[in-house]
Image (cartoon, rainbow, N blue to C red):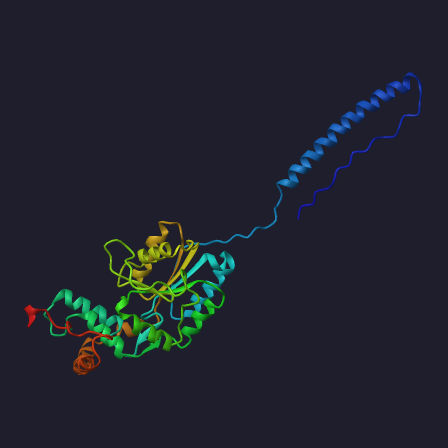
Length: 331
């Protein structure tokens, strides 16, 4: 630490001699005093400049930069979020969780994200393939209704709560559409997840559907869960921040099992100079790789008729398989 000493100016002793020599001595003394005075003033000014240019008191600063990481353990995300909140401040941070294969996973391959991706590719390659279920959205809804889901890791809900308990804004951002709202909230609650008290925007979200971007698809934001209907997650999150009137975060922590969704968030917010800590959750990667389409097709064939019978009795409020058939040209 640099120490600045105080410079004191003191007058010399008074001349007690008289006469001409005394006068000369007075003149020389005055000149010496003036020289000394100027010297001491110069020293004092140099000292003041040196003090002012010395080390200053530390001010709170934090280094925030975009990062890409992978993890099999959501505890890594929790640690990252808590560290960032300490550096940047809780309300300057936003943590965003994907749902499927990040927080929740199907017990079976049928109806899982990997099943949906397989059906989407199948429909694009050969609409008349006998394994094509037709309207995959309708079938997905029925499978969400009939299937229980499990947490991706035993303490997954606890990890989310650890972030929420520190007062950090946390939401869920899913590619699921609003037609799967009831099934989604049922399984979130059953597995111990809630985003109500950590959500951004108005308490409870918004009643009904809204279109986040022009010429897009209808979405829904409720209790901290944003159902985006498969749209660009970066654009969706930005639209939600604008709709809710929330202050733009200084940094975003995003957790998703799909790199394309992480890229979408980074693409949108890098343009706004908002860094993103992008975490790809790989805890379900092995199950995705081991997906067996033949087994999934066999499972669907065994439960399609019972699901249609349930719909006949209970009505189409929970799901609607009336359009889940192959295109006319394939029949």
